[in-house]
Length: 472
Ligand SMILES: *[C@@H]1O[C@H](CO)[C@@H](O)[C@H](O)[C@H]1NC(C)=O
Ligand SMILES: *[C@@H]1O[C@H](CO)[C@@H](O)[C@H](O)[C@H]1NC(C)=O
Ligand SMILES: *[C@@H]1O[C@H](CO)[C@@H](O)[C@H](O)[C@H]1NC(C)=O
Ligand SMILES: *[C@@H]1O[C@H](CO)[C@@H](O)[C@H](O)[C@H]1NC(C)=O
Image (cartoon, rainbow, N blue to C red; front, side):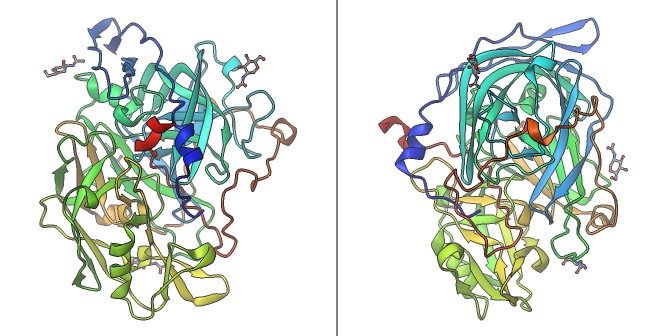
């Protein structure tokens, strides 16, 4: 879907930021019987008190296979929730910090048909707080109620993890089999105020081998054989998998005072070999975001990127904010971050987002205009269009993002004919009958239709934290 500009109404919704509820007894069981005290987090800028989750490391595996949905639109993994544990597919989103799962609610649910829902009454360890939850992304919203339960992922378990049981989502945020989203940025931007799953693990000394997590994402968008679900690559929690990259990982710090999103300052961009004019400082801050399909940036810079591509044109109408260009042009785009000397290329295959339905020789480019002015979200979102080209590492301490060159092992997973992975933890969720799930009028949320672009899913999951919320 096209990005919706923030209206006053949307801004005001964000003033309903719930207070985090009381933290459970903080203890981690690294090995059975051995308990270590967890210090409480300091009070965040929101005035909500951080939750020090109880967690237990089960070093069964650190690696998790991902699924690539809709030819690189979304990358998801599986988590298991509750007692007994039930598996759910969730988008792993480094552009936001809240975990939520779809649930039936009270019959007014706007969850699309066919999605496996979390059933609070089926988990003996679930505790509802009754606190309302609401989150606004660049391209949609979700709302529900906060609760706590045991959550497992990639061999680790956090007990009393706060998450939202969501019964309202705007259209196109979820597409079966995905049941929700796991935010993997820092607690500072959590709408719930809760400590994200990964951060509870990173904070507890000795639990993760290294205080970081890593992604390798696959490419299927230039493969005409691509199915709706394909192998998505690898997520590794607490380690880097050296068989998936070559050389060293180039870590660049998150700019000072910017902990929240995984921010990198874009230091240079080239388009077709020519440098594009960039301001330094916050105008060039980018959220490195696995939960967004494409790359968005300020209109003037985006216009300069396309100015290097002969025959490119700014879109109008439904295509506003996007550009088209002749599909036979191989567009070479590179990015430098922080003080690095590495210029990371985006492959022409990723730049070429998709052909126009009514003119297959004209393609939509993967870099679009983003207007995040009036919000505290960074000016740029660097999503999967870029991240498919590198091994990416998100490091807690020192706070930084690292990129490395993909190995031949990783590259061999692009476009490979293979079955999408299936959830490996917990029991399979019961299948949901159609009568369980009211189908929704997908246009009723006011989202723009993008019928002219086939299979268009821009899941922009950068949480929009609006500066202006105080005026509401
Ligand atoms: C982890 O170690 C650091 C540095 O030694 C210390 O400051 C911090 O309090 C420790 N955290 C926990 C949860 O024990
Ligand atoms: C690293 O990735 C390779 C290739 O996917 C996989 O076979 C291996 O098990 C992974 N290693 C670890 C420690 O996860
Ligand atoms: C569902 O209904 C119950 C009882 O009326 C109410 O307490 C609860 O808040 C409702 N939940 C939602 C999500 O509306
Ligand atoms: C897709 O793009 C990659 C990177 O440019 C290329 O190596 C691969 O051959 C392409 N695949 C197809 C099916 O065209």
